[in-house]
Amino acid sequence: MVVLNKIYTRTGDDGTTALSTGERVRKDSTRVAAYGTIDETNAAIGLARVYLAGAYPGLDAKLARIQNDLFDLGAELSTPPNSAKASKRGERLTITPEQVRRLEEEIDELNSELQPLRSFVLPGGSPAAAALHLARTICRRAERLLVTLSADPNEEISDVALQYVNRLSDLLFVASRYANDRGKSDVLWVPGQNR
Image 1: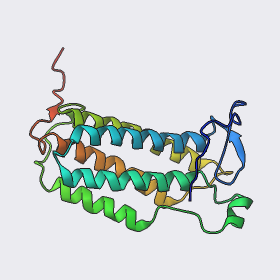
Image 2 (image 1 turned 90 degrees about the vertical axis):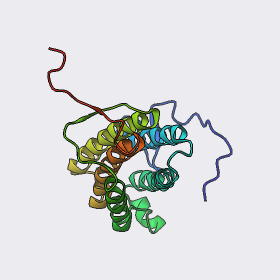
Image 3 (image 1 turned 45 degrees about the vertical axis):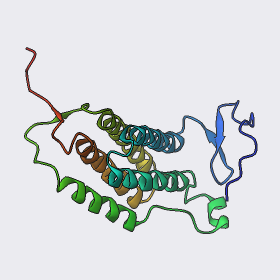
Image 4 (image 1 turned 120 degrees about the horizontal axis):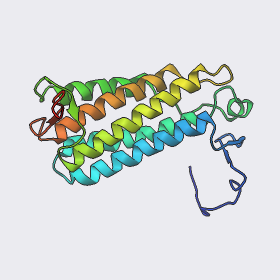
């Protein structure tokens, strides 16, 4: 259970933060940047949900579940598996293959109502779609940070976490089209239009 009685602690004034194990690391470490960018993705999804405002309740429910999943992912990333303290604390909260499968099913479900694309989509259309595109690009940045983290021989992240973030960016793309009147209001790229 999480209990937050006091919001500021002054312990980060030296440029460090605590992982869930209590270990202090620099705030600009790749691990902190990765879970911080997952948090940014979650905030952008929250903004998109405000713009949806009941227009697509099924999509909103999917996004609500994803927001909770992203806290699970943040917990996983803030607890390095190779930490001695993590081993002593017992089981870590991790993203599961079932959560990845659910994203795949939801992508297929949303995409089944969309016409095939004949061009790339420009971020925009409805406010909800624009916010979902923003969430997608932030999610892709998080994915790049996870790849960087996984390449570090002193770090470790699960393959499932990488899969989840990769699928999530795909879902956010499909969701942005869905929020654009099921693709009817998509803004399409016209190559060379302004030459």
